[in-house]
Length: 66
Image 1 (cartoon, rainbow, N blue to C red):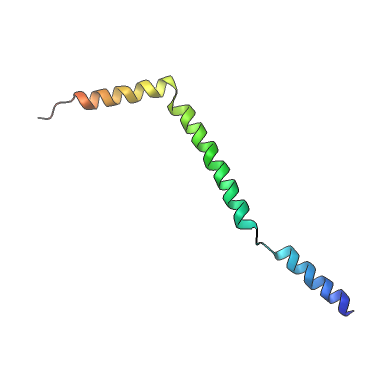
Image 2: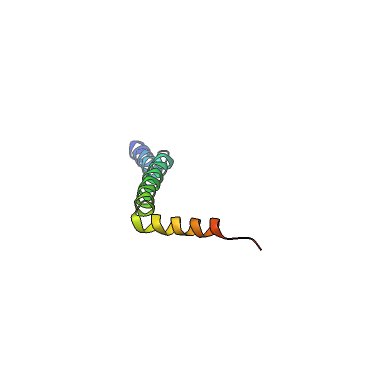
């Protein structure tokens, strides 16, 4: 009977052990950030966004201060 209780206690500890969870969470966060960066780069480097940003900067630089 003592052996059974020890086995149950050890099994409970192994199931509740979360020592590696923070590493996995950081890895998933890093992959998500890299994917978001790639998506953002694709959107910003597109022709429509590039021409819109160029137009905004040109208008800002050509304005005169009164």
